Amino acid sequence: MTSHEILAASRRLTLAEQSRLLAALAQQIAAAVAAEQQANARTPAADQLDSWTQILQLAAQHGVATGIGDLAHQHDHYIYGTPPRGEGE
Image (cartoon, rainbow, N blue to C red; front, side, top):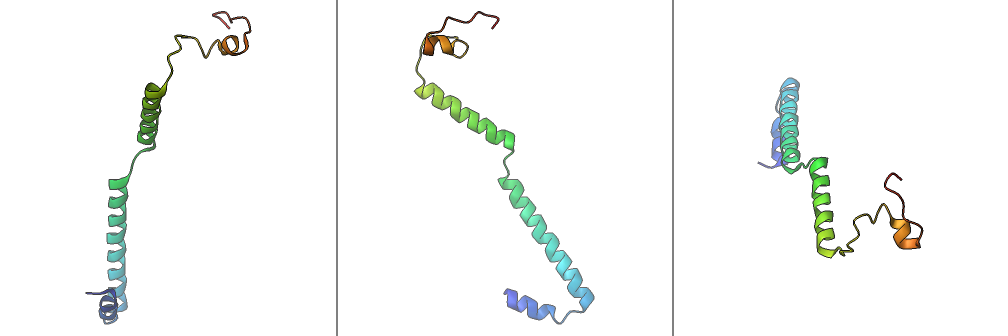
């Protein structure tokens, strides 16, 4: 049955019957949309985890082993030649 045929048939219903039909259709559509969204839904935490996993994989594949374990803490020393920072700094 096409949508035009359904509309034509619904015109033969009383106003109360049309209202009930419309409410039932709206519920079915809302349920179908919710089911589709739930089936396709990914939580932000899962997206972030996937992003971090991808970043870590890229770092492992393309990273350069410097042998310097404190590079971030001592970056001024290694980049600009400033005196090394102490442990507490």
